Image 1: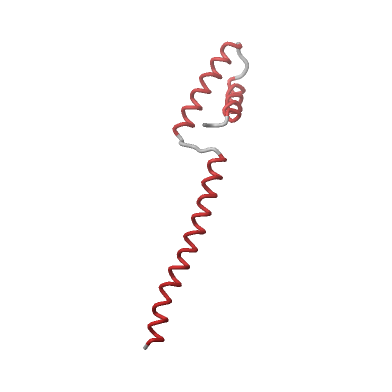
Image 2 (image 1 turned 90 degrees about the vertical axis):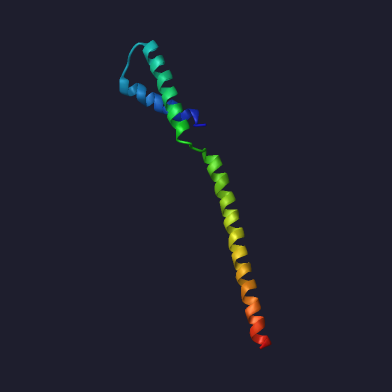
Length: 88
């Protein structure tokens, strides 16, 4: 869900573009703009900053584990060849 403050800010900017008018017209315009913006943002499949930061932390931990496993695999792959060389 998009932050209400962002939508309100965009609504205010739209109202300023259309100028002053009767309060009813401004309210209708604000409601319409709010619906349009909500619809547009929902189609963009956006995430909140908190969700992004959480996923970034998960990715960093996963990357760290993958690096450690790659290092361990390289050590294990090198070990048999070193043992077979000394056995000959």
